[in-house]
Length: 98
Figure 1 (cartoon, one colour):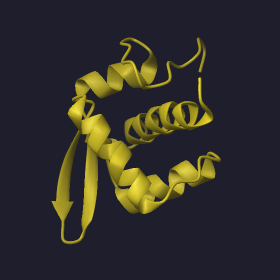
Figure 2 (cartoon, rainbow, N blue to C red):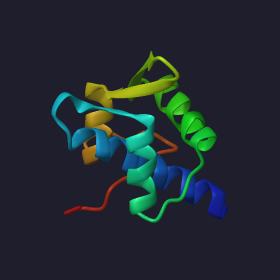
Figure 3 (cartoon, rainbow, N blue to C red):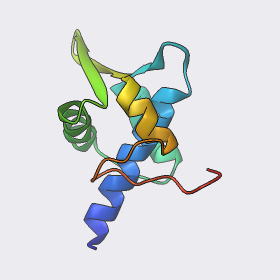
């Protein structure tokens, strides 16, 4: 598996987990970008938007535009994927106990 694919799968899982950690299950893209960087998954704003679009296509998040920024909200399916209860190809599956 190519490193780019591994990074994308990790980024997608971390986005879902960050959303699962907050009341309301939603964050704007600036906070998500900072969260990914804090986990060692450096990503540009454009790269983050590509990942958010992909997650929305899989019905794992819904996206809302507020002014010039976007906000992602976790769906029930996204929450299940973030905990490993559901599996989606393209999102890293968490290890047991994570």
